[in-house]
Image (tube, rainbow over all chains, first blue to last red; front, side, top):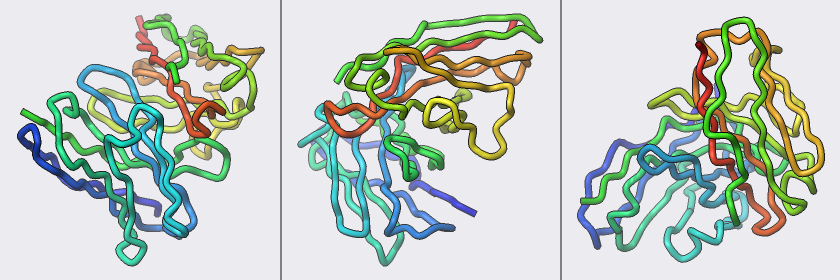
Length: 118
Length: 111
C-alpha cells in the first residue's frame, strides 16, 4: 500500500529554521517525483516544487524559488521541505504528494503538516 | 504563473448534474492534455479524481467525468450526492514553469 506519512504540526517564531518530513512506503521511492503543495488558511492549493530522489533533480515554482529547499534521503525514503528563516506568511498546511508518470499529476498525498509561525 | 480560474461556488440538488469549469491559457490547459481534478473535504488532504483530462483513477466513481475544449476544462458530477459536497481544484501542467498550476478552487454545495 502506497503511503506518505508527514511529520507533526510545528509552531515556530519568525526567523527560525524548520525542516518537515514526508516518509514514503509501498513504492519505489527513488523513481517517482515527490512534490510539495502549500495551502494557506482558508485558501487554495499552491504548487511549490518537485524532487526526483534518483538524481536529486529539483524544480521550484517561481513563487517559491529561493524561499524553500526541497530534498530527500533515498536510504530513509523520506522527502523534506525546509526553511532557513520563517516568516509569518509561511503559516499554512503543507502537503507532500507523489507525482505519477504523466505531467503534473499527484496520485497519493500525505496527511498534511500544519506550520504556524507566530 | 497565475492560478487557473474556477467559479467560487456551484450548487445542485441531489440527483442533478453539475459542471465546474477551469479556464487557463494556451500555455497550460489549452496546450496540453494534462488537466487533473482533485476533491478536498475540510481538514483533509486532496484526492485525485480525474487525470489527463478524462481518466479516472481506480476506485473513483464513474459519476465524475472530465472534458476539455480550448483553454477551458470541465468536471461534471452526475447524480449528485450529499457526499460530493467538498472543494474541487483543477490543475494543469504549465510550460511557463514546466511544473503544475492549480485552479482557484470551487466549493460544491448539495442543496
